Length: 240
Image (tube, rainbow, N blue to C red):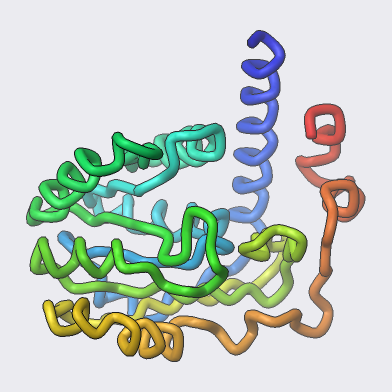
């Protein structure tokens, strides 16, 4: 138990430090930022979870009430630690028999008029870039616009052995965040979700989702450590 606590603290510090490095060295450009205001449902790809810290922090500057849906396991602990630093809250998604009452709570949360709810469209375990129904159900139930987030860094590490090809931007990178307003979600959209899913994919899956020229393709944790040895993750080898 003590080792797990130490590991948790070290990883939180390492990822928090790297996030600060990215904030200080990267240029982030927001496209259609004005379409996001209080009371929307935000959807993003699970592989962009690290980059979403930058997006959510930008929303927090507007003094918005932000809630992010995360898993109840250890992965969710790391996410919760980072986003709480800029005032966002988390809704921890349980497994098994506890899921039904949790979904009822989510529906009630979606009805709060000034709350922005953020959810991974293909999480928690994929398939990659295949939207699930949850975000759209919340938007329809709360009568809120659904905003899709598309994030494209000019240079990044992609962990291709993970199902989501988790993206970690490199320092001194340009990052483009496009916000796509889908408007209100209807019951008909949910009823015909197979077709609507393809519509979402067409609008939100970046062309650059495959490896860009010059990007580092990282398949293992050891490779990641080597690439980042000069940055904040240089001591991570002892805990991974």
